[in-house]
Picture: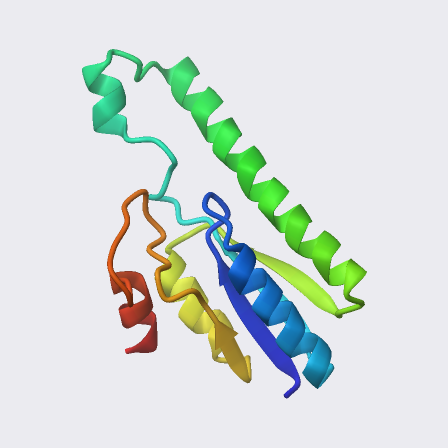
Length: 138
């Protein structure tokens, strides 16, 4: 293998996906691409919930967006640090449009895609495999 892509939700970072992808990349001496899916429609907060609580001011939304951005950057930094420790060649790819389209596009150039079966790329929990994973595999 030459390239492995690992899909991550930067707001709910999967340590298991990271460890498995690093192990696979180290064993195969492959380039590991951490694909951080920063979907423009996905946030850690619910706008309707904020509106009901009367907390949907533009200032509050900016603060929440910054918090999400920082968490996503921390997730990517964790991935990079763990790759460095394992001496795995890696790169980080941030997608800022529609996650499923970007992941499919990125996976075309990979020999292997690592994604958690319960990856939803949403605030909600689903059974396995999650709808997001099912759509990517289809």
